[in-house]
Image (cartoon, rainbow, N blue to C red):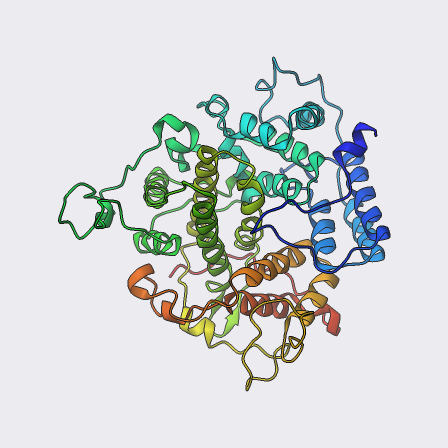
Length: 490
């Protein structure tokens, strides 16, 4: 087997409770189309498709379509159309070695050499050891390197690319994700709490702005549980605390991807404190603890994109916030490949990025009552029957009144990559949490008004609103495009 074949084998699914399942049974021809696309993209295309640092999404699109059941023809035509818009790969000035791997951080000219280096590392030592050593280790998170920050930078794209590699068992995509991380600039590293860079700094530090978590030693405090531990604080409750603070954020400049997380010191400090508060109440002693934390983030990412997008009877499919949803899908596959210490760093770094993007999009309100009362026609025309909240539409008896076949049909035919990526994330979270009844969340618990409306239809409702907003191309509509304007702060 050649090294190229070893780096880009046929996609497969790692074992794991939360790992997504490909819909249907891909044919040999479809698998071949995917593998050939993977290899061609690696050999010909650069990680950035322009000189502003915007990312090559070609293989993300291909794998999302593959997951949703697209056939060989659609995969090949999609790859061809996307590849035509990419920059050619740039030969690097010199090789990357064990001696100089930290010397060319942030320099895109070295992307190809970084890939060659990390390709060898991944094949020799495995993807898990590679990401532990070169992303999460304390030694690569000094003030001048900050690899965890780079990993989550510019709408989490290095994490997303690496996540595809773990989810589909593609060593080459893990190597590409590592290389992409290393050629990213440090971007607002002060947003990330010190304990996410250095394990020795982990602790239960909390902020003076968060009185519910201050007294962890007082034996009769209402802020502690009976065993003296900090009370659990859900990620949605942390989001609400952040919303109430109404912190300032620097304006977005369309001239540079590096401005996406541009913050001010006050905001960075408060986000650090909020993330530390959330982490301080997570046990993270077992795989079940990690799965529970991932579930919190899945609900939160979906609500930030879906619920905040529903405003005054209209859904704004926000191009920036949808990245929080699509990236959340990779938490299970990456997390299960890490040590417990690195899992804590991953969860904290992802939540930091989520809160940063949320506040950068001007702190939108989550109007749960209005969202759950939103009309869902035409894909769900029969309002007399309840929604089928989970997407297993091939199950016996699940056909009637099920919007998922129409949602997926429109997603795989949509020409914009993020549509299929969003729908597959919503499909997966719905398969896990779609049967959650009302009452799971309360306003007293998470702070948001009308939280009692929340149930497992969050995911299918968001999917329906997304398909309708972007254009039902399978039904003859045109691509309507993502919303990328500035919200009015509220």
